[in-house]
Length: 179
Ligand SMILES: O=P(O)(O)OC[C@H]1O[C@H](OP(=O)(O)OP(=O)(O)O)[C@H](O)[C@@H]1O
Ligand SMILES: Nc1nc2[nH]cnc2c(=O)[nH]1
Image (tube, rainbow, N blue to C red):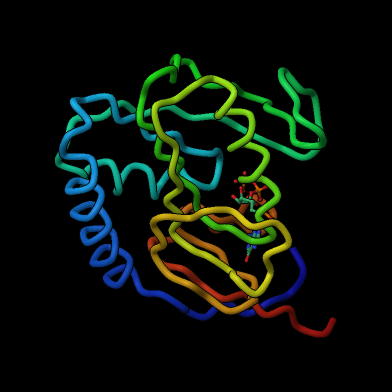
């Protein structure tokens, strides 16, 4: 890591309050889902958000994870996004809710959506903790957004800088220092 400072952008309390509201909204929207709801987390960044969001949703649901990357050893691929770890569950006829930590250009999610749609889910929506709308290159339909943020480099609550800081309970803003 380069020398940097770290300041709080979104506190742990603000995150928890927002997740409770998201959980209520999702629980209402999927009240008639008859336990066919499945949360699909994209690793690694979504692991903490997934744990808190899942516990804030009061309708029954499954939880599964996948790892997508734009390079590396692929199991399944669609253009330049590779699935490094695929889902364990079959999503046919299920209501899929993709759980993401941050959406930037939209490239990852647009490709993941395309791959998952081929598996014939009943529905597919996206829930992201953070959104950087000013960075979007590809439009993705995001139904649930925790916070819209400016184009700044953030860490914490699952999001890393060189694999560090994922454990922080808050979202921090990193500023690189001159060296
Ligand atoms: O909208 P995009 O421009 O495609 O970027 C967003 C993606 O980048 C981050 O993942 P990253 O590749 O850093 O992996 P990680 O989840 O393991 O940290 C993030 O978790 C999203 O999946
Ligand atoms: N760690 C990290 N990854 C990102 N990917 C897209 N935006 C960001 C960000 O602000 N921080």
